Image (cartoon, rainbow over all chains, first blue to last red; front, side, top):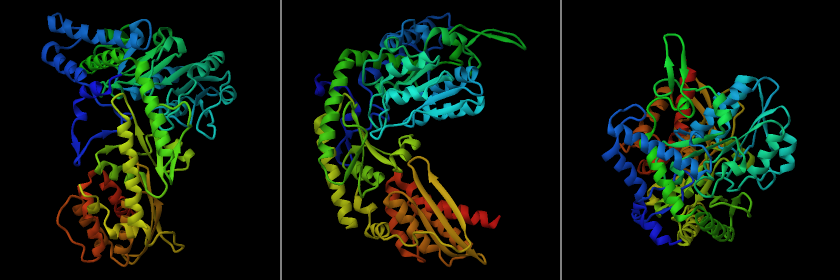
Length: 408
Length: 141
């Protein structure tokens, strides 16, 4: 993997921020975009733009081909089988809300259970809270081990024959750990529950095979994997999608409309009411091409190397706390300096051209579990280098000095 | 971008030695506010007497900017009438927009003027003032 050649393809990286070369360490929030993705979106608008699935004219056909071509790319990327099992959404949040609002609300009743974990992002937590409230189902949590991981023993204890839905993130956006999705799915299925996976932090970074995992639903976002904002997808098994009612109604999703009754198109269209995110889907398709050309295994290994390097470098510092397990980490590291608030850390780093995230990372329950109000997080992607991590570590030392001096 | 513009000595002093941090036993109004984007929390206690803020205390969690701003604000508003306190809150909003205002009543607040050059941090500085506004509005209703 030639990092310099990869970095060359990301125009945004080649600029100075506050007088320093940019070090972008916030890809877990949103990744940067390569030239090929930016060009694909522009080309679509310059040459092919029209509405999809209705134009008789040539541009209408081209736009439809581009949009449906992107769906095929997503299906192949996740090894999802039939492309109609891919529903385009605005992102992970919309995809998970669709499952919670349509599937969960139709199958759950009082006495049933929905099982999640305390490490979930708000987008994989609140939809289930709301579905539980609306149906009278009980929301249950698989407890976390002291290092933040979940044990299969606890999974076995939490999921029961009353469980209808289990929803777990593949990769934690705070703890940087990978959950045993295949094993949890097997336990969910044995109890008659469907398995939903939040793939926002896994899809950009590692090979995902939804059929091998045997999950029932899988949600992810395009903007974290070199694609545009505003596009993501939900994979769902055909048999389940066919049973689900749409939650948005309007153009594009209907079969026949009468004054008092209407019927819906087949899947996936019945879940894509309104003019879809065509240019976004085209951009996502280009992002998938880009990632596959480099190779997901290569990207995965590169990020794990960076994570190990960052862990070693940061854990050697004094007065720092690193959250999450040491082993089996993806390319992100969440931490706090003992006497400096993470906002202050992020501001000082920004003044040195280094972009990190500070806050609760949309994981307030997990922050309470960690007994902190906020943390700092540096996250890596294919365009980051060990040099970036050296600059992070140096800047953290300077931050400590700055505040030590100011406070001391 | 100069860090020293943001983290002035006065600010760090209030962060390190916050004034009026804690809780009071006297009859008072408590306002709890969060900054949902970043997790900062403030709990502001105001003792109101005869149209005045007789005393103020705060507790909570946050960065140097939000906590020092709360510390300065509580110092600044003690003994002020509701109208005076609200007009200081207005003035503070203007300060955050980069307008040239000065706090003759409590000059240390001027130290927070650098925050306006750090747009992501303005919400940190205004959290305590928003709690003050809310408290006085509640009292006046």
